[in-house]
Image (cartoon, rainbow, N blue to C red; front, top):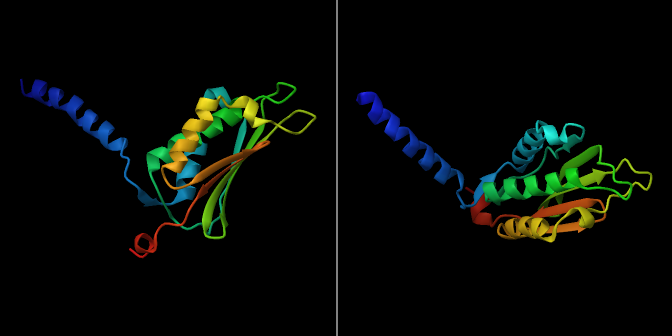
Length: 168
């Protein structure tokens, strides 16, 4: 009977952990670490095994105040859409370049999707269902950031946190 009691507590523990994993509170985080984790996770997905995901971090990148679940979800959506995108010649992009940089006071996450096609341009707007890009845009906006897409490049801009956050 004692074992049954422990067994009944286990689902409650998992429910509590799952609830805390969906935390919508902003946290000051190492953006490079989060981006690398998402890139590494997707590189193990068998659907994208033929695609090389390369991460080039800016090692001087300052921390940013973000909602970790929102940043992760937006990155996953954007990278998956980029990996699934087709060029005019219907070839999957063999390489996705993800970079982090500082631009002025902002942190920029730049996703470049290279195409194997002769034209060299992957038009992401054709690869993204409006709802997928809009979902990522809303997640980024909820953190005070912006999301833009031009040709084969996506840029996510994360603003500087308020001074009282960075001082602590």
